[in-house]
Length: 289
Ligand code: PXG
Image 1 (tube, rainbow, N blue to C red):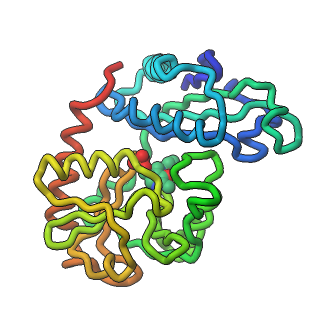
Image 2: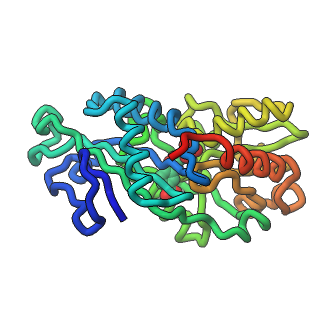
């Protein structure tokens, strides 16, 4: 496997960065998880745009233009000859001293691109649907570390993941500080009620997921009503269908939440239709390499 680090393609065993990198010391950096299907990178421009937005908020300078970064992603994908890949794009603040002060970083952000085979949820889960729970750890407050910033500090989500795994679940609902449903640890959440989609608005402590946006766009084309609206746990429990969206998960049906069976306990018609259309889209859309 070839890894891209600051302009160079190196073998996995040589892909190393400094222990003084502030990405390691403080989680001071940003990242994206991207996917390619059939030699096409899905929503590459959207991921690059979000990476630059996260970096802007953190006042982190990315030493490549968007076009140069896209070219670097394509170059890395070609070097690895993967038709279907998961691409991890990481930009750290770079090497500094043992203090928080970003001014003492040498002014050179480390850029790392890793591509690998995609690790999916078992296919069986897409057919059967998954069970999830709500966990005690609430999502970061937007006025503290805004969840819109896809930073290298994922401790908020990792704590929630630990709580889910300790209870025997793979994914968990995180509430915002007001008690509304925010999102899951690595996925956005949707409910379906009377053939309308509902998903929490992005201002409430939710990452503006790129898969989420793709689903909202698909819904429009398919003439399914879609609403960005606050959701309570009660509304999730009484929904007809529920599903999660994310780059890795795509669209995964949820059939049980906090012990309550959702709808008839099987992946719903609207969810299945959307997943079908989404998979068609991923095969034909995207930047070729
Ligand atoms: N919410 C959060 C908190 C995320 O991290 C999503 C929603 C979905 O966004 P996209 O743009 O992918 O539709 C994410 C992204 C993992 C993993 O290992 C998951 C993400 C990122 C990195 C790792 O499960 N999900």
